[in-house]
Image (tube, rainbow, N blue to C red):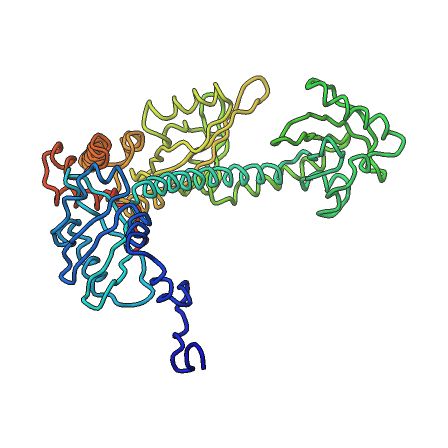
Length: 480
């Protein structure tokens, strides 16, 4: 028979390989094979069976300028960083097919360090091999930017979730009936429990319904015209309507606002005979405030406590609410003469403050780390202040314990005054200064660690140790 006999057929090709590699090899002229190997990566090494570099091709001009050709006649493991030497040994003895890419860090002649991924290909029975390398500094910088962007997105997502939770609580617990309406379609997007109670409907009954359905038929035309006028004016007076289903008379206020690119209407309804319902809701809100796990305090304009819930009484370490009502809030809250003055100034300027970190001093002298949010509200001819207080002492201690070896920012360090001893703050400051100096040295030397160690006046091993402690090591570590 012509051609190969049944027993002479080439074996089944390996995955991602040519079906007949010998034919492909014979079709390549020697100079074409050499040019192909030299152009695949940024550097190509010819390694003998003893692991010594016998020849080198450097298509990457930047690597060429950094003295890569000086590796010729040197053992391959001697031109890489100490932590990469075991990988060189593994690649030289690994005979598995297909070969896999491995990353090592090279020490260049100029003192710099550069990550390169290699693929080692055996070239003959004498143990010689060719190592094709691709320089990874650009990938490392890209990965670092990706990590920073991801962390920023996570922080923004957490802030968004917190804002959404606060909005939902205020919306659901509010005693005033409120509807959120799509300005384009005039359909109801959201309704709070107070609105459903006023209209005598069950939860979800108003979802995606036309807003006109809540108004008696004879008043609908005037109500729709009022909605249209709300898009042109922010000072529109409330309009009197009759509610559908014989639910009585009401006054409706409408205000336009935007969420992204969507125009929405905030519709507030005040029933003409709403006093019993308001009183009922007020009682429910009072019970909720008393039972809520976060502390709540209501003060007058002079910061004298008017109302305090059970959580605040427990946090202050007093026997009953009678012990705190009528007393100055500064007796328990904040560092004397500092925190409360700043908090009240912020409320007077912006009407609210959110998540202010401060301390609460208990009756027995103990101090707890807290977060405080506050709001100003009119009270007859004066002003009162409402504060929610959350105990975050355990959370802060767990974060400090988990991240003890991570330096803080300058802002975080200054916030520790009054919460930690001066000795602990100085230790945190020392870690921060050390990290900032190392980052500045690496930036100044274009990530040349040997030069960075020299200008910092420390040994290279000491610098590596500090880089590992501060989490400033190589970011591209996906290879074994």
